[in-house]
Image 1 (tube, helix red, strand yellow):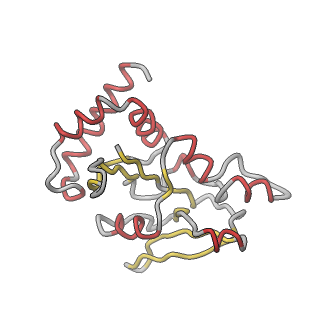
Image 2: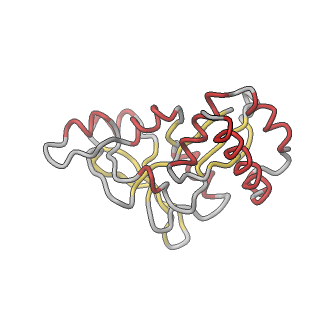
Image 3: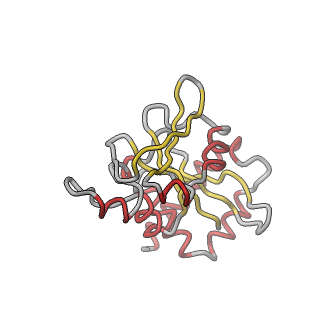
Length: 181
């Protein structure tokens, strides 16, 4: 990552941090900045999250490790991460019209995690997300073994989690990522 890209990313994150204090009450930018300065891999992941439309922001701190938790906070599922099926196995199973990637593959390449159902619901407590789109979420192994995958959205003022075939993909479905720094 070039120094100019790093500086630009840090400035964007600082402005977003200040604009959305309700997402991370009690946290200080100086503490976060110090952590980011020592985490070049995390900066690369945050750069990818930003570049694909995720608008990452801090949503808290991990109670066990003390690490800062970043999550995609774009209003809708990140535009640069849509139209992919759930994982590589699902993508390979498609006989026709195979998408270029999958949520799990993209998340791994970016160095981030898919949100679990609990994390997705917690994010929805911080704002209204996915009112026009939907986002793949981490799917339990027993559901995935049967060919399914989970996704969530917000409709009618409520958060819903549904299932779909893991090989399906839609222009309005992407995924949100989580990164601990």
